[in-house]
Image (cartoon, rainbow, N blue to C red):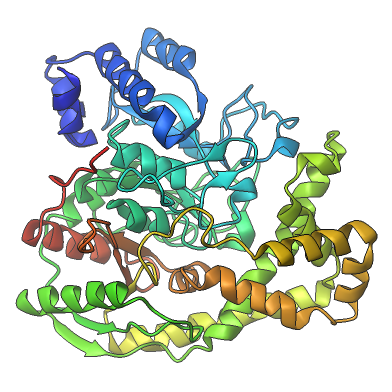
Length: 496
């Protein structure tokens, strides 16, 4: 097999060729490493290369899993590998070295995947772009001047560029779906509790984050979810298992669905005409397949949901930073934005944070009411095409002001008195302007998928999102399979 052949196969097809003895895992690993070397200088998709570990896996004998011999990449956050730091894109986290693999990593290994690296992400996985000071900026293979999204941006760049056919990600506010939409991939965020993230963590981001993959085919995503799903001892709660394997479900027609759709930003910010066009195009395609389409949206206060999402950071960042500081990290080991969020988080009372978390129940009930009348919700995944590098950064004056206030100690004092509420809300609004559609699934715990059905006239991918009721990943995969057959996307390749 040569590189051109390698690029044409999804993970399932590569595993089938390994099973037939047509190619060896070592050959596939060499091809993946060659592709990584060829594009790394332009993409910067990987934060850590683990070629030695990969060769050790093959030498020890790969398990007879569904993807035996297929090269694979973990994300450098949550996916603990014993003996190596999980950086989270943050210098301050490098002192923390796990002593055992995360459950999700063990499941990837049981699939027979050959892990040879970890992918780039923003510091502490906090942004929808992947540009950490520690690892540098990851670039979009479709346009190197644009972001591949975040926080699983390195994973998406690696899959779109053909380094691997499938890579691991996680999604706490859109971090699988946003990069999938930016890079022309399939990105499924499973239901809360579907995949265990232990043993070091019970629930990431209060349960808003779940584990999954970015892939080029629906069948790869379905087969991976079959192997990932299911509880581990000590998990906070156990979700009902699927009624049939996802690898079977995705191949069956979904039946006639009633799908509510909207292009309105839930926080009232502008939506780019191309993002609107992407949804209208999907509506026409779905109607041609016999589905019922209704313009409708859940009765949810989008601004309230955005504020509640922001409080994730206010609760998580100080705790993560404190953990790193306890291991010896210093102020200079964190980016200025992280230090600002740490201060703002410390200024939020436990009661205020709890009140924001309580709101998740209301969002979930309202979405369930919507789903009582509509099988699925269709929205843009992104409010605009993949943004250019730096486009989503706060203005320089704002960064300087916040950093100065933080260094002086005034930021915490002003925040505790509530005098910065307006500025904080505006910053949150600005940061979510390009990605206001994805957080709903995270706070309500439901599954959602981004599919690459649309490309702009400039040749940029711009995915659309489908949101299902809790536990209905099978329904999403059935529709995804139908759409993939109706409008195949696997043949599209970036001009890298």
